[in-house]
Image 1 (tube, one colour):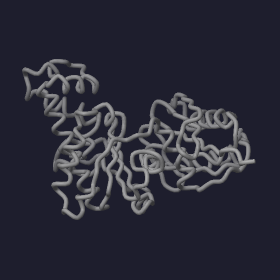
Image 2 (tube, rainbow, N blue to C red; image 1 turned 180 degrees about the horizontal axis):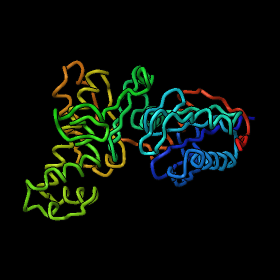
Image 3 (tube, rainbow, N blue to C red; image 1 turned 60 degrees about the vertical axis):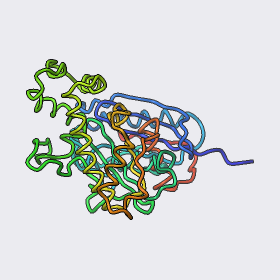
Image 4 (cartoon, rainbow, N blue to C red; image 1 turned 120 degrees about the vertical axis):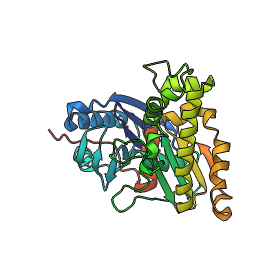
Length: 326
């Protein structure tokens, strides 16, 4: 009799919600769950919600090979050194989960890195060992794989593409630097650009909307509003420059564009045109084989789950068991 399929549990921690997914080794979702993050309640309360969600999916049936967790911020060796959106500093996340689930292998990574591994394992970068992933969302995150291995860097902070310089002496970023790519190519960047450039377009309907949000900007882009199109031009210009640096430094064969805003932009981003613009600024033997493609994973938690297969190489340890830290 064949051994039962071993599943992985993926957990993606966001500023507002935690996404859980039970996946098989091909990345197919067997069960899903969501919970509010509520980081203001403190680290212990968030850990309780993580443990509850993991245990619930583990009880779905079948052996569990491990747990993969994607978390925003600077994550290194299982420690969340700094996650601004969560208010976390030096949180030993992997150790805390190991205490609760002592029989399970647990991998913890930066959220963008987890999605990159998922796209490589079963998504848009499947079978491609040299890939850059760019997550355009509220901010701009990135990750890369070289030779089939995740590029981490000395302190786990590799591929902070949102804070590469895009405009010397440009807008002040929340990180304290000026002109960061994130200030132009992200949700924050679109809103910053709207505030900074509103006065240049007095006839723009978008400029006359005092409480405009990201969705309003996207609608205005599709309607051909001149201010909105200027913001789109700024976004594509800053993103192009960042991707040129990444592709040139890593000699990537594929760039995957994801993130909530990346998906919402859709055809507005013009990936074929973006690919041509990036290639045009690279040496021919660096850029000729480069392709820019949209992300395919249905859930960020799938990428986190793929950490189990790709990084831990886990085999089924048997039924899920938990240990309370109370």
